[in-house]
Image (cartoon, rainbow, N blue to C red; front, side, top):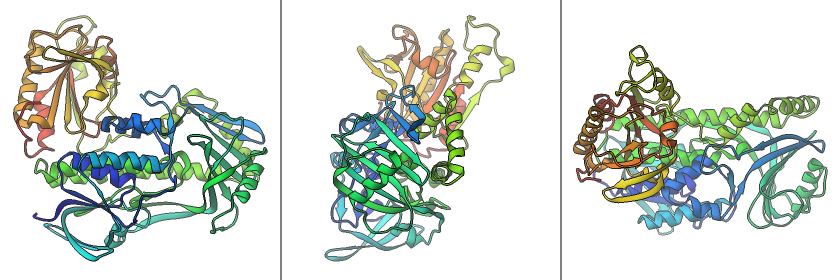
Length: 567
Protein backbone atom coordinates (compact mmCIF):
# COMPACT_ATOMS: atom_id res chain seq x y z
CA UNK A 1 0.00 0.00 0.00
CA UNK A 2 1.08 3.59 -0.28
CA UNK A 3 1.56 5.19 3.10
CA UNK A 4 3.75 7.33 5.28
CA UNK A 5 5.89 4.38 6.38
CA UNK A 6 6.17 0.64 5.95
CA UNK A 7 6.19 -0.21 9.66
CA UNK A 8 5.11 1.81 12.70
CA UNK A 9 6.83 0.55 15.86
CA UNK A 10 5.28 1.69 19.14
CA UNK A 11 7.57 1.61 22.18
CA UNK A 12 11.30 2.41 22.27
CA UNK A 13 12.51 -0.02 24.91
CA UNK A 14 15.02 -2.75 24.00
CA UNK A 15 12.43 -4.70 21.96
CA UNK A 16 11.36 -1.70 19.89
CA UNK A 17 14.94 -0.49 19.42
CA UNK A 18 16.07 -3.88 18.10
CA UNK A 19 13.07 -4.17 15.79
CA UNK A 20 13.40 -0.66 14.36
CA UNK A 21 17.16 -1.04 13.97
CA UNK A 22 16.87 -4.35 12.13
CA UNK A 23 14.15 -2.97 9.84
CA UNK A 24 16.21 0.14 9.06
CA UNK A 25 19.20 -2.10 8.35
CA UNK A 26 17.16 -3.84 5.66
CA UNK A 27 15.93 -0.68 3.98
CA UNK A 28 12.43 -0.67 5.48
CA UNK A 29 10.77 2.71 6.08
CA UNK A 30 10.15 2.60 9.81
CA UNK A 31 8.98 5.03 12.46
CA UNK A 32 9.69 4.34 16.13
CA UNK A 33 7.54 6.34 18.55
CA UNK A 34 7.43 6.43 22.34
CA UNK A 35 5.11 8.35 24.63
CA UNK A 36 7.90 9.12 27.12
CA UNK A 37 9.78 12.36 26.61
CA UNK A 38 13.13 10.79 27.54
CA UNK A 39 14.72 7.35 27.83
CA UNK A 40 14.47 5.54 31.13
CA UNK A 41 16.98 6.40 33.83
CA UNK A 42 16.13 3.29 35.85
CA UNK A 43 18.27 0.19 35.53
CA UNK A 44 15.23 -2.13 35.17
CA UNK A 45 16.23 -5.38 33.42
CA UNK A 46 19.87 -6.11 34.29
CA UNK A 47 20.55 -9.58 32.84
CA UNK A 48 21.62 -10.16 29.22
CA UNK A 49 21.97 -13.86 28.40
CA UNK A 50 24.31 -15.71 26.06
CA UNK A 51 21.86 -16.09 23.17
CA UNK A 52 21.03 -12.39 23.19
CA UNK A 53 24.75 -11.57 23.26
CA UNK A 54 25.25 -13.87 20.25
CA UNK A 55 22.59 -11.88 18.41
CA UNK A 56 24.22 -8.63 19.53
CA UNK A 57 27.54 -9.99 18.28
CA UNK A 58 26.09 -10.34 14.78
CA UNK A 59 24.72 -6.80 15.12
CA UNK A 60 28.25 -5.65 16.01
CA UNK A 61 27.49 -4.35 19.51
CA UNK A 62 28.20 -7.27 21.87
CA UNK A 63 31.73 -6.26 22.83
CA UNK A 64 30.66 -2.68 23.51
CA UNK A 65 27.85 -3.80 25.79
CA UNK A 66 30.03 -6.34 27.61
CA UNK A 67 32.50 -3.56 28.37
CA UNK A 68 29.69 -1.64 30.11
CA UNK A 69 28.61 -4.51 32.38
CA UNK A 70 29.76 -7.29 34.68
CA UNK A 71 30.13 -10.83 33.27
CA UNK A 72 28.67 -13.13 35.93
CA UNK A 73 30.17 -16.60 36.11
CA UNK A 74 27.76 -18.35 38.43
CA UNK A 75 24.97 -18.41 40.98
CA UNK A 76 25.18 -19.36 44.64
CA UNK A 77 22.03 -20.01 46.66
CA UNK A 78 22.17 -20.33 50.44
CA UNK A 79 19.67 -21.26 53.12
CA UNK A 80 20.17 -21.05 56.86
CA UNK A 81 23.71 -19.79 56.39
CA UNK A 82 24.77 -22.86 54.37
CA UNK A 83 25.30 -23.22 50.60
CA UNK A 84 22.28 -24.82 48.97
CA UNK A 85 22.96 -24.66 45.20
CA UNK A 86 26.10 -23.64 43.32
CA UNK A 87 25.95 -23.38 39.51
CA UNK A 88 28.80 -22.23 37.27
CA UNK A 89 28.41 -21.03 33.66
CA UNK A 90 31.94 -21.71 32.41
CA UNK A 91 31.03 -24.87 30.45
CA UNK A 92 28.38 -23.11 28.35
CA UNK A 93 28.91 -23.77 24.63
CA UNK A 94 28.88 -20.13 23.58
CA UNK A 95 31.38 -17.36 22.95
CA UNK A 96 29.61 -15.68 25.89
CA UNK A 97 29.62 -18.27 28.71
CA UNK A 98 28.17 -15.91 31.31
CA UNK A 99 25.25 -13.67 32.18
CA UNK A 100 26.04 -10.02 31.57
CA UNK A 101 24.72 -7.88 34.41
CA UNK A 102 24.28 -4.40 32.96
CA UNK A 103 21.74 -1.64 33.46
CA UNK A 104 18.95 -1.47 30.92
CA UNK A 105 19.99 2.17 30.52
CA UNK A 106 23.27 0.96 29.01
CA UNK A 107 21.55 -1.62 26.83
CA UNK A 108 19.18 1.00 25.44
CA UNK A 109 22.03 3.48 24.93
CA UNK A 110 23.98 1.01 22.79
CA UNK A 111 20.88 -0.02 20.83
CA UNK A 112 19.86 3.59 20.25
CA UNK A 113 23.30 4.46 18.91
CA UNK A 114 23.07 1.48 16.53
CA UNK A 115 19.65 2.64 15.33
CA UNK A 116 21.01 6.10 14.60
CA UNK A 117 23.98 4.67 12.67
CA UNK A 118 21.43 2.88 10.50
CA UNK A 119 19.57 6.11 9.82
CA UNK A 120 16.76 5.63 12.34
CA UNK A 121 15.53 7.73 15.24
CA UNK A 122 13.19 7.64 18.23
CA UNK A 123 10.29 10.10 18.09
CA UNK A 124 9.59 10.87 21.73
CA UNK A 125 6.51 12.43 23.27
CA UNK A 126 4.25 10.67 20.76
CA UNK A 127 1.55 8.42 22.18
CA UNK A 128 -0.58 5.99 20.23
CA UNK A 129 -4.22 6.96 20.77
CA UNK A 130 -5.83 4.38 18.50
CA UNK A 131 -5.46 2.62 15.19
CA UNK A 132 -7.58 0.77 12.66
CA UNK A 133 -6.64 -1.62 9.90
CA UNK A 134 -7.94 -2.75 6.54
CA UNK A 135 -6.67 -4.89 3.67
CA UNK A 136 -4.19 -2.21 2.60
CA UNK A 137 -2.65 -1.28 5.93
CA UNK A 138 -3.23 0.54 9.20
CA UNK A 139 -4.14 4.10 10.10
CA UNK A 140 -2.94 5.26 13.50
CA UNK A 141 -3.59 8.38 15.53
CA UNK A 142 -0.54 9.67 17.40
CA UNK A 143 -0.82 12.40 20.04
CA UNK A 144 2.14 14.69 20.62
CA UNK A 145 2.86 18.03 22.21
CA UNK A 146 1.59 19.85 19.11
CA UNK A 147 -1.61 17.85 18.67
CA UNK A 148 -2.80 14.74 16.89
CA UNK A 149 -1.29 13.19 13.78
CA UNK A 150 -2.66 10.52 11.47
CA UNK A 151 -0.16 7.99 10.17
CA UNK A 152 -0.63 5.43 7.41
CA UNK A 153 1.58 2.34 7.52
CA UNK A 154 1.56 -1.16 6.12
CA UNK A 155 2.14 -2.75 9.53
CA UNK A 156 2.16 -1.81 13.21
CA UNK A 157 4.10 -3.54 16.00
CA UNK A 158 3.34 -3.03 19.68
CA UNK A 159 6.58 -3.08 21.68
CA UNK A 160 5.02 -0.81 24.27
CA UNK A 161 5.18 -2.89 27.40
CA UNK A 162 2.79 -4.47 29.87
CA UNK A 163 0.20 -1.68 29.46
CA UNK A 164 0.46 -1.77 25.66
CA UNK A 165 -1.75 0.71 23.80
CA UNK A 166 -1.49 -1.49 20.71
CA UNK A 167 -2.78 -4.48 22.66
CA UNK A 168 -5.62 -2.45 24.16
CA UNK A 169 -6.60 -1.12 20.73
CA UNK A 170 -6.75 -4.68 19.46
CA UNK A 171 -8.86 -5.78 22.42
CA UNK A 172 -6.49 -8.72 22.92
CA UNK A 173 -6.95 -10.60 26.19
CA UNK A 174 -3.88 -10.70 28.43
CA UNK A 175 -4.62 -13.97 30.22
CA UNK A 176 -2.84 -15.08 33.36
CA UNK A 177 -2.50 -14.29 37.04
CA UNK A 178 -0.79 -12.05 39.58
CA UNK A 179 1.40 -13.50 42.34
CA UNK A 180 0.43 -12.95 45.95
CA UNK A 181 3.81 -11.71 47.15
CA UNK A 182 4.99 -8.14 46.75
CA UNK A 183 8.64 -7.62 45.82
CA UNK A 184 11.02 -4.76 46.59
CA UNK A 185 14.19 -3.74 44.83
CA UNK A 186 17.08 -1.36 45.26
CA UNK A 187 20.01 -0.37 43.10
CA UNK A 188 22.57 0.63 45.70
CA UNK A 189 26.22 0.66 46.61
CA UNK A 190 27.43 -2.31 48.65
CA UNK A 191 30.90 -3.25 49.81
CA UNK A 192 31.23 -6.78 51.19
CA UNK A 193 33.46 -9.82 50.83
CA UNK A 194 31.22 -11.79 48.45
CA UNK A 195 32.56 -12.08 44.89
CA UNK A 196 31.37 -9.44 42.45
CA UNK A 197 31.14 -11.91 39.54
CA UNK A 198 28.38 -14.06 41.03
CA UNK A 199 24.69 -13.77 41.76
CA UNK A 200 23.99 -14.42 45.44
CA UNK A 201 20.59 -15.66 46.61
CA UNK A 202 19.51 -16.19 50.21
CA UNK A 203 16.44 -18.24 51.08
CA UNK A 204 14.83 -17.83 54.50
CA UNK A 205 11.66 -19.15 56.07
CA UNK A 206 9.75 -15.99 55.22
CA UNK A 207 11.07 -15.32 51.71
CA UNK A 208 14.04 -14.79 49.41
CA UNK A 209 16.62 -12.07 48.66
CA UNK A 210 18.89 -11.95 45.60
CA UNK A 211 21.91 -9.77 44.77
CA UNK A 212 23.05 -9.05 41.18
CA UNK A 213 26.38 -7.28 40.62
CA UNK A 214 26.55 -4.09 38.56
CA UNK A 215 29.62 -2.07 37.50
CA UNK A 216 31.60 -0.38 40.23
CA UNK A 217 30.44 -1.18 43.72
CA UNK A 218 26.78 -1.27 42.74
CA UNK A 219 24.34 -4.15 43.22
CA UNK A 220 20.73 -4.81 42.26
CA UNK A 221 18.88 -6.25 45.25
CA UNK A 222 15.47 -7.92 44.93
CA UNK A 223 13.52 -9.45 47.81
CA UNK A 224 10.05 -10.81 48.41
CA UNK A 225 8.08 -8.84 50.98
CA UNK A 226 4.99 -9.80 52.90
CA UNK A 227 1.79 -7.85 52.44
CA UNK A 228 0.52 -5.62 49.68
CA UNK A 229 3.01 -2.78 49.97
CA UNK A 230 2.66 -0.39 47.04
CA UNK A 231 4.53 2.70 48.19
CA UNK A 232 8.19 3.12 47.33
CA UNK A 233 10.15 1.45 50.15
CA UNK A 234 13.01 3.16 51.92
CA UNK A 235 16.53 1.85 51.61
CA UNK A 236 16.58 1.32 55.36
CA UNK A 237 13.52 -0.93 55.17
CA UNK A 238 15.05 -2.94 52.33
CA UNK A 239 18.33 -3.24 54.23
CA UNK A 240 16.53 -4.61 57.29
CA UNK A 241 14.61 -7.10 55.15
CA UNK A 242 17.61 -8.50 53.23
CA UNK A 243 19.79 -8.67 56.34
CA UNK A 244 17.18 -10.89 57.93
CA UNK A 245 17.12 -13.11 54.84
CA UNK A 246 20.89 -13.26 54.43
CA UNK A 247 21.63 -13.67 58.16
CA UNK A 248 24.46 -11.16 57.85
CA UNK A 249 25.22 -7.46 57.64
CA UNK A 250 24.36 -5.97 54.25
CA UNK A 251 25.56 -2.34 54.36
CA UNK A 252 23.52 -0.95 51.47
CA UNK A 253 24.00 2.77 50.82
CA UNK A 254 23.55 5.45 48.18
CA UNK A 255 20.46 4.02 46.48
CA UNK A 256 19.92 5.21 42.90
CA UNK A 257 16.50 3.57 42.75
CA UNK A 258 14.11 1.79 45.11
CA UNK A 259 10.71 0.37 44.23
CA UNK A 260 8.07 -2.16 45.18
CA UNK A 261 6.13 -4.14 42.61
CA UNK A 262 3.86 -7.05 41.95
CA UNK A 263 4.81 -9.68 39.40
CA UNK A 264 2.48 -11.23 36.86
CA UNK A 265 2.31 -14.26 34.59
CA UNK A 266 0.38 -13.31 31.44
CA UNK A 267 0.41 -13.91 27.69
CA UNK A 268 -1.78 -12.94 24.76
CA UNK A 269 -3.43 -15.70 22.79
CA UNK A 270 -2.10 -14.47 19.45
CA UNK A 271 1.04 -12.49 18.57
CA UNK A 272 -0.35 -11.52 15.15
CA UNK A 273 -3.65 -9.74 14.54
CA UNK A 274 -3.84 -9.08 10.81
CA UNK A 275 -1.44 -6.21 10.15
CA UNK A 276 -0.66 -5.74 13.85
CA UNK A 277 1.90 -7.64 15.92
CA UNK A 278 2.74 -7.76 19.61
CA UNK A 279 6.26 -8.28 20.95
CA UNK A 280 8.08 -8.20 24.27
CA UNK A 281 6.13 -7.28 27.39
CA UNK A 282 3.15 -6.28 25.23
CA UNK A 283 2.78 -9.98 24.42
CA UNK A 284 4.07 -11.69 27.56
CA UNK A 285 5.04 -10.75 31.10
CA UNK A 286 6.30 -13.05 33.80
CA UNK A 287 8.35 -13.38 36.93
CA UNK A 288 11.87 -11.87 36.81
CA UNK A 289 13.31 -15.21 37.98
CA UNK A 290 16.09 -16.09 35.56
CA UNK A 291 16.09 -12.66 33.91
CA UNK A 292 14.25 -13.94 30.84
CA UNK A 293 11.91 -11.04 30.05
CA UNK A 294 14.01 -8.49 28.16
CA UNK A 295 15.94 -11.24 26.40
CA UNK A 296 12.74 -12.89 25.20
CA UNK A 297 11.44 -9.56 23.89
CA UNK A 298 14.67 -8.80 22.04
CA UNK A 299 14.51 -12.21 20.42
CA UNK A 300 10.85 -11.60 19.47
CA UNK A 301 12.02 -8.51 17.59
CA UNK A 302 14.94 -10.29 15.97
CA UNK A 303 12.62 -13.05 14.75
CA UNK A 304 10.02 -10.67 13.32
CA UNK A 305 12.30 -8.10 11.67
CA UNK A 306 13.68 -10.18 8.79
CA UNK A 307 10.26 -11.60 8.00
CA UNK A 308 8.63 -8.17 7.86
CA UNK A 309 11.46 -6.87 5.69
CA UNK A 310 11.06 -9.67 3.14
CA UNK A 311 7.32 -9.07 2.91
CA UNK A 312 7.67 -5.28 2.71
CA UNK A 313 10.13 -5.63 -0.18
CA UNK A 314 7.88 -8.10 -1.99
CA UNK A 315 10.31 -11.01 -1.61
CA UNK A 316 8.00 -13.17 0.49
CA UNK A 317 4.29 -13.73 0.83
CA UNK A 318 2.13 -12.67 3.73
CA UNK A 319 2.03 -16.25 5.06
CA UNK A 320 5.65 -15.92 6.20
CA UNK A 321 4.46 -13.52 8.90
CA UNK A 322 2.27 -16.22 10.43
CA UNK A 323 5.46 -18.05 11.42
CA UNK A 324 6.22 -15.26 13.90
CA UNK A 325 3.32 -16.35 16.09
CA UNK A 326 3.96 -20.05 15.44
CA UNK A 327 7.57 -19.73 16.62
CA UNK A 328 7.59 -17.07 19.29
CA UNK A 329 4.29 -17.76 21.09
CA UNK A 330 5.53 -21.26 21.93
CA UNK A 331 8.77 -19.81 23.31
CA UNK A 332 6.87 -17.25 25.40
CA UNK A 333 4.60 -19.98 26.75
CA UNK A 334 7.61 -22.05 27.78
CA UNK A 335 9.26 -19.10 29.52
CA UNK A 336 6.05 -18.39 31.43
CA UNK A 337 5.75 -22.01 32.53
CA UNK A 338 9.39 -22.23 33.67
CA UNK A 339 9.43 -18.92 35.55
CA UNK A 340 6.02 -19.61 37.08
CA UNK A 341 7.23 -22.92 38.51
CA UNK A 342 10.51 -21.40 39.73
CA UNK A 343 8.68 -18.51 41.42
CA UNK A 344 6.17 -20.73 43.18
CA UNK A 345 8.90 -23.09 44.37
CA UNK A 346 11.21 -20.25 45.40
CA UNK A 347 8.57 -18.47 47.46
CA UNK A 348 7.34 -21.49 49.38
CA UNK A 349 7.04 -20.78 53.10
CA UNK A 350 6.33 -22.66 56.30
CA UNK A 351 6.79 -26.43 56.58
CA UNK A 352 7.27 -26.87 52.83
CA UNK A 353 10.35 -24.63 52.69
CA UNK A 354 12.79 -27.15 54.27
CA UNK A 355 11.47 -29.87 51.94
CA UNK A 356 12.04 -27.55 48.98
CA UNK A 357 15.58 -26.87 50.10
CA UNK A 358 16.44 -30.55 50.41
CA UNK A 359 14.99 -31.31 46.98
CA UNK A 360 16.92 -28.44 45.39
CA UNK A 361 20.15 -29.61 46.99
CA UNK A 362 19.58 -33.18 45.79
CA UNK A 363 18.44 -32.39 42.25
CA UNK A 364 21.21 -29.91 41.52
CA UNK A 365 23.87 -32.28 42.81
CA UNK A 366 23.78 -33.93 39.37
CA UNK A 367 25.97 -32.34 36.73
CA UNK A 368 23.53 -32.96 33.82
CA UNK A 369 20.83 -31.10 35.75
CA UNK A 370 23.13 -28.14 36.39
CA UNK A 371 24.13 -28.05 32.71
CA UNK A 372 20.48 -28.06 31.63
CA UNK A 373 19.63 -25.24 34.01
CA UNK A 374 22.47 -23.13 32.60
CA UNK A 375 21.64 -23.93 28.97
CA UNK A 376 17.95 -23.17 29.42
CA UNK A 377 18.57 -19.93 31.31
CA UNK A 378 21.09 -18.79 28.67
CA UNK A 379 18.39 -19.31 26.00
CA UNK A 380 20.79 -21.15 23.69
CA UNK A 381 18.27 -24.01 23.73
CA UNK A 382 15.55 -21.84 22.17
CA UNK A 383 14.50 -23.63 18.99
CA UNK A 384 11.61 -23.89 16.53
CA UNK A 385 11.38 -27.60 15.67
CA UNK A 386 7.67 -27.43 14.82
CA UNK A 387 7.88 -24.26 12.75
CA UNK A 388 6.10 -24.22 9.38
CA UNK A 389 9.17 -22.65 7.74
CA UNK A 390 11.91 -25.13 8.70
CA UNK A 391 12.64 -28.53 7.20
CA UNK A 392 15.16 -31.12 6.10
CA UNK A 393 15.79 -33.78 3.47
CA UNK A 394 17.75 -36.78 4.71
CA UNK A 395 18.59 -39.87 2.67
CA UNK A 396 17.43 -43.28 3.80
CA UNK A 397 19.46 -44.87 6.55
CA UNK A 398 18.99 -48.19 4.74
CA UNK A 399 20.95 -46.89 1.76
CA UNK A 400 23.96 -45.82 3.79
CA UNK A 401 27.41 -47.23 3.08
CA UNK A 402 29.11 -49.45 5.63
CA UNK A 403 32.49 -48.18 6.78
CA UNK A 404 33.99 -44.76 7.35
CA UNK A 405 36.74 -44.42 4.74
CA UNK A 406 35.13 -45.45 1.47
CA UNK A 407 34.99 -42.79 -1.23
CA UNK A 408 31.93 -41.13 -2.66
CA UNK A 409 29.18 -38.82 -1.42
CA UNK A 410 26.70 -41.40 -0.16
CA UNK A 411 26.56 -41.15 3.63
CA UNK A 412 28.00 -43.93 5.74
CA UNK A 413 26.18 -45.33 8.74
CA UNK A 414 28.51 -43.29 10.93
CA UNK A 415 27.97 -40.04 9.03
CA UNK A 416 24.20 -40.63 9.17
CA UNK A 417 24.48 -40.75 12.95
CA UNK A 418 26.75 -37.72 13.04
CA UNK A 419 24.36 -35.67 10.89
CA UNK A 420 21.42 -36.71 13.07
CA UNK A 421 23.30 -35.27 16.06
CA UNK A 422 24.01 -31.98 14.25
CA UNK A 423 21.87 -28.85 14.67
CA UNK A 424 18.30 -29.73 13.76
CA UNK A 425 15.98 -27.58 11.64
CA UNK A 426 14.82 -24.66 13.76
CA UNK A 427 17.75 -24.85 16.19
CA UNK A 428 20.49 -22.31 16.81
CA UNK A 429 23.34 -22.14 14.30
CA UNK A 430 26.65 -23.20 15.87
CA UNK A 431 29.91 -21.31 15.78
CA UNK A 432 33.48 -22.39 15.06
CA UNK A 433 36.85 -21.09 13.85
CA UNK A 434 37.63 -21.07 10.12
CA UNK A 435 39.52 -19.20 7.40
CA UNK A 436 37.48 -17.27 4.84
CA UNK A 437 38.91 -17.51 1.30
CA UNK A 438 37.68 -15.05 -1.31
CA UNK A 439 39.85 -14.98 -4.40
CA UNK A 440 43.41 -14.50 -3.16
CA UNK A 441 42.38 -13.13 0.24
CA UNK A 442 42.50 -15.31 3.36
CA UNK A 443 40.96 -14.09 6.58
CA UNK A 444 41.05 -16.05 9.85
CA UNK A 445 37.59 -15.69 11.37
CA UNK A 446 34.66 -17.50 12.98
CA UNK A 447 31.47 -18.69 11.37
CA UNK A 448 29.55 -16.23 13.57
CA UNK A 449 31.47 -13.41 11.86
CA UNK A 450 30.75 -14.79 8.39
CA UNK A 451 27.00 -15.27 8.86
CA UNK A 452 25.31 -12.02 7.91
CA UNK A 453 21.89 -11.19 9.30
CA UNK A 454 21.11 -9.22 6.15
CA UNK A 455 20.68 -12.48 4.25
CA UNK A 456 20.29 -16.23 4.44
CA UNK A 457 23.59 -18.13 4.62
CA UNK A 458 24.02 -21.39 2.71
CA UNK A 459 26.76 -23.70 3.98
CA UNK A 460 27.80 -26.46 1.54
CA UNK A 461 29.95 -29.04 3.36
CA UNK A 462 32.15 -31.26 1.14
CA UNK A 463 32.85 -33.86 3.85
CA UNK A 464 35.89 -36.01 4.54
CA UNK A 465 35.92 -37.79 1.15
CA UNK A 466 35.04 -35.30 -1.58
CA UNK A 467 34.79 -36.22 -5.24
CA UNK A 468 34.72 -34.41 -8.57
CA UNK A 469 31.04 -35.27 -8.91
CA UNK A 470 30.38 -33.94 -5.43
CA UNK A 471 32.08 -30.63 -6.18
CA UNK A 472 30.04 -30.31 -9.36
CA UNK A 473 26.87 -30.86 -7.31
CA UNK A 474 27.84 -28.19 -4.78
CA UNK A 475 28.87 -25.77 -7.54
CA UNK A 476 25.58 -26.32 -9.35
CA UNK A 477 23.60 -25.64 -6.17
CA UNK A 478 25.60 -22.46 -5.57
CA UNK A 479 25.03 -21.26 -9.16
CA UNK A 480 21.31 -21.94 -9.01
CA UNK A 481 20.91 -20.14 -5.67
CA UNK A 482 22.92 -17.15 -6.92
CA UNK A 483 20.97 -16.90 -10.17
CA UNK A 484 17.57 -17.14 -8.47
CA UNK A 485 18.12 -15.23 -5.25
CA UNK A 486 21.22 -13.10 -5.70
CA UNK A 487 22.33 -11.24 -2.58
CA UNK A 488 19.44 -12.66 -0.55
CA UNK A 489 21.54 -15.81 0.05
CA UNK A 490 25.28 -15.84 0.79
CA UNK A 491 26.86 -19.18 -0.17
CA UNK A 492 30.04 -20.81 1.17
CA UNK A 493 31.68 -24.19 0.66
CA UNK A 494 33.03 -25.52 3.97
CA UNK A 495 35.99 -27.88 3.66
CA UNK A 496 38.36 -29.47 6.18
CA UNK A 497 41.22 -29.20 3.68
CA UNK A 498 44.12 -26.83 4.12
CA UNK A 499 43.57 -25.04 0.83
CA UNK A 500 40.79 -24.05 -1.55
CA UNK A 501 39.60 -27.04 -3.63
CA UNK A 502 40.68 -26.44 -7.23
CA UNK A 503 37.48 -28.02 -8.53
CA UNK A 504 35.37 -25.09 -7.32
CA UNK A 505 34.66 -22.01 -9.45
CA UNK A 506 36.84 -19.04 -8.45
CA UNK A 507 33.89 -16.82 -7.51
CA UNK A 508 32.56 -19.27 -4.88
CA UNK A 509 33.67 -18.32 -1.36
CA UNK A 510 35.25 -21.06 0.77
CA UNK A 511 35.60 -21.58 4.52
CA UNK A 512 38.67 -23.63 5.46
CA UNK A 513 37.74 -25.73 8.50
CA UNK A 514 41.28 -26.95 9.20
CA UNK A 515 40.64 -28.01 12.77
CA UNK A 516 37.39 -29.71 11.82
CA UNK A 517 35.41 -27.66 14.34
CA UNK A 518 32.59 -26.88 11.94
CA UNK A 519 32.52 -30.38 10.47
CA UNK A 520 32.18 -31.84 13.96
CA UNK A 521 29.62 -29.27 15.12
CA UNK A 522 27.40 -29.80 12.08
CA UNK A 523 27.86 -33.57 11.80
CA UNK A 524 29.19 -33.01 8.28
CA UNK A 525 31.42 -36.05 7.76
CA UNK A 526 29.95 -36.48 4.27
CA UNK A 527 28.49 -34.01 1.80
CA UNK A 528 25.55 -32.02 3.22
CA UNK A 529 24.13 -28.52 3.34
CA UNK A 530 22.69 -26.17 5.95
CA UNK A 531 20.66 -23.02 5.32
CA UNK A 532 21.02 -20.48 8.14
CA UNK A 533 18.20 -17.96 8.45
CA UNK A 534 18.84 -14.23 8.96
CA UNK A 535 17.98 -14.65 12.66
CA UNK A 536 20.81 -17.21 13.06
CA UNK A 537 18.65 -20.36 13.20
CA UNK A 538 18.79 -23.39 10.92
CA UNK A 539 16.06 -23.08 8.31
CA UNK A 540 16.82 -26.18 6.25
CA UNK A 541 19.38 -28.95 5.97
CA UNK A 542 19.96 -31.99 3.79
CA UNK A 543 22.31 -34.98 3.56
CA UNK A 544 23.51 -35.49 0.86
CA UNK A 545 23.29 -31.91 -0.44
CA UNK A 546 19.94 -31.89 -2.23
CA UNK A 547 19.48 -28.89 -4.52
CA UNK A 548 15.93 -29.78 -5.53
CA UNK A 549 14.78 -30.06 -1.90
CA UNK A 550 16.50 -26.75 -1.11
CA UNK A 551 14.73 -25.14 -4.08
CA UNK A 552 11.36 -26.37 -2.83
CA UNK A 553 12.05 -25.05 0.67
CA UNK A 554 13.11 -21.62 -0.58
CA UNK A 555 10.21 -21.40 -3.02
CA UNK A 556 7.80 -21.83 -0.10
CA UNK A 557 9.35 -18.81 1.66
CA UNK A 558 10.73 -16.45 -1.00
CA UNK A 559 8.22 -15.51 -3.69
CA UNK A 560 10.50 -13.04 -5.43
CA UNK A 561 14.29 -13.09 -5.81
CA UNK A 562 16.37 -10.37 -4.31
CA UNK A 563 18.84 -8.35 -6.35
CA UNK A 564 20.81 -10.58 -8.68
CA UNK A 565 24.07 -8.80 -7.96
CA UNK A 566 26.73 -11.27 -6.76
CA UNK A 567 27.65 -11.25 -3.11
